[in-house]
Image (cartoon, rainbow, N blue to C red; front, side):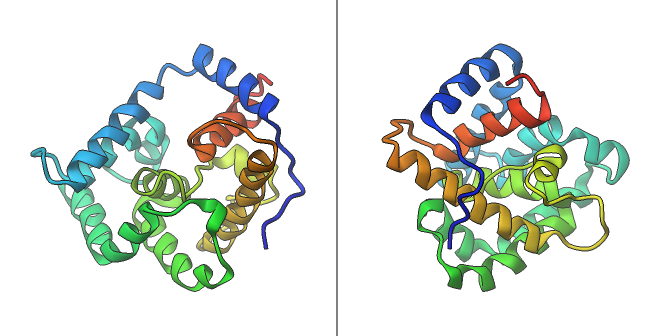
Length: 203
């Protein structure tokens, strides 16, 4: 099931980590949003899940709000609504790793991605889903998707392309497992690799 025609190695992850730390100071927003999402899910802070996601979306997805949508109270309501609609499925996904993705997941995950995509766009949807289930949903952007043959320029939902991206990323994570890579979150490591190699073009 996994697609393995885009090989990665532990050496790639190491090089990407070094380049990412040097060139991407916005990682602080990712780390902050990750903590806030966890606390919001446990309801131990007076910040909602939508507000927690906003910490990352406002920095890592700012072009979407510059050209497509205003980040206002109505948008917060949209984000809250889609989270509530898929609350049970999101809770299940949060406990999973992408290495365990199964063919039968496609039927449930396509509508989930499409619903988030309608609110956040295809790039924002992936980033939000990753924060909500950080070891299950991979992150992409326009340049990363294009490299993997999954261009985002055409109209219509990108849910089928995101599913293919999940399969590709699953294959990469399994490669790292077989190579005895010792990192905790292979999805974050692969995103750093993709970002440095295809978005920044520094690897």
